[in-house]
Image (cartoon, rainbow, N blue to C red):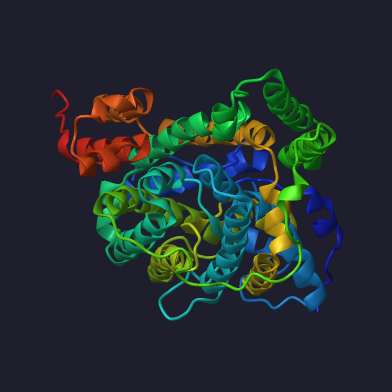
Amino acid sequence: MRSFPLGHFLAPVLLLCMGNYNFMFEHEHQETTKVAAAIAKEVNKVDVSYHEPNGTQDEMKTELIYGLNDRPPVKDAIFAAVQHLLAIFVAIITPPLIIAGALNFDIETTSFLVSMSLFASGISTFIQCRRLGPIGCGLLCIQGTSFSFIAPIIAAGATGGLSMIFGAVVAGSFVEMGVSRVLRFTRKIITPLVSGIVVTLIGLSLIKVGITACGGGFAAMGNGTFGSMENLGLAALVIVSILFFNRSSNRYLRMSSIVIGLLIGYVVAVILGRVDFSQVQSYGGFNIPMPFKYGIEFDLSSIIALGIVYLITAIEAYGDVTANSLISGEPVQGPTFLKRASGGILADGFNSMVAGLLNSFPNSIFAQNNGMIQLTGVASRYVGYYIAAFLIVLGVFPAVGIIFSLIPDPVLGGATLLMFGTVAASGVRIIASQHIDRKAVLVMAISFSFGLSVELVPDILSQCPDMIKNIFSSGITTGGVAAILSNILIQIKDPA
């Protein structure tokens, strides 16, 4: 049996809040560049080189403590699982908290949505790592609630509540499952340029959600306290705390800066009396998953809006599987890789459908766990089984969801404002990795103009039919459609 250095796992215990798009940290910048380069090479055959700092693929495989199909002892597997769990936990619970806050759900509904997000993420992670038939990539790929869908989900919820949201989540997931079957063709349509534009629009659109929370959220708008000095002070405290620890020379303090900022803000909010524990009737009991608890309703416009985002996340999943394969010392081309990529994207869609049935939101592969594999030296997919079990257990106990549902809006807003800014920044990095010619400039101009227009002036669609209004009320879907169509239709012949 190989020796297992405990230091590989004790050091990164503080990795508690690296969000799905949290590219603020050094190794996350590295992963973004790697994914962008991998996608560019496979899709467009653009000469974008990523120089792996740890050497060749074979060298990376020999540097691993446990490879993809190795079975670590229980003690070692639990240590590794805890590191991954701490890296994704806050990222999983943040989207349901934001959606619940925007739609003004009560504490009971909010805590249940948080718990089901953890539960669904556990099931999704198991399927992705285990690979059930053609479903799953068979890598140590962790899935969790995706930030990408927040804006169109809020739009759907404002129209028809949770039943319409879950109907769109379930029906729209078939788009991504379909993409997995025709991956060779869709990669030519959803290029890295298109992906970068959409990711940038996701970040820019969500900044509005973050700044609204900083001011106190929609509840504060109703009672006249929106933008009060107390609300802004709490948000500023979280932001300053995050920036302070992010500048630390200690890499682990730097990587845990968001969770430290959240904890500081939470404690101060409790001292100020901003956390109302009287809302909680009980912390005990168990959450029993109840499919269709809130009903299910299918609305074509909401399905189309989410379907467009599913189309984009399919290509993002391809990049995540590419990066994970590379880090795990597995092939990144050939039939084995294509089977893994196709299975990973199929699982992305299938797991999102399961999440919708379980009263949760779409799931996607988390890129930050690729960094954890590098940090710990453990790429064993069997560790994913432990991670999945931990997530399921956390989802069963309502106390977990309740505690995090009590986070005041300004505290959550201070953290998410920076996180959403890094989403936009990561999109810019993907765009910057491409060759920017005249066509690319035109595609970006059209996409950003259309996408930001409906975000800045939503009344522009007030005279449109309800279906058009519901589909294009989100800048993500509007800009995404514009990016896809303009990238296909615009053809420029270079002068001889």
